[in-house]
Amino acid sequence: MKTRFGKVPFNKLTDEEKEAVYQECERIRPEDGEPLNEEDLRLHDRAGIRPGRPRIGLGAKRINISMEQRLLKKADRFARKHKITRAKLIAESVKAYIAGAA
Image: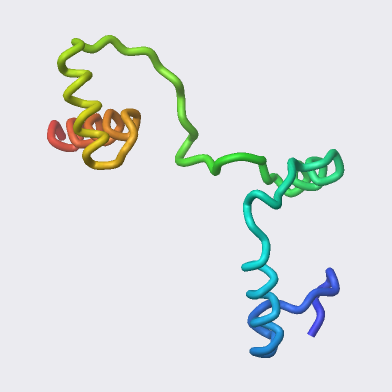
């Protein structure tokens, strides 16, 4: 069964064909990649695909805040201990504060 692009949907492949696709994907490593060329960028743009990390929600906004130094050190220690970023700690804290205030 061919689609209008001439490719068979993955779920319609035989087990052997699926295994071949899997093995090909396993062979490719991130360090084998290269930046998108002009044609690929144009195709991504047409498809509405932006290169880079996927947007979460409306996207991130960089802000500057002031915080007492000892509190910042405690926050950084907490974030390292829980293997999260400072930004994620602050964002989750704001969410929890708003949820508690509602």
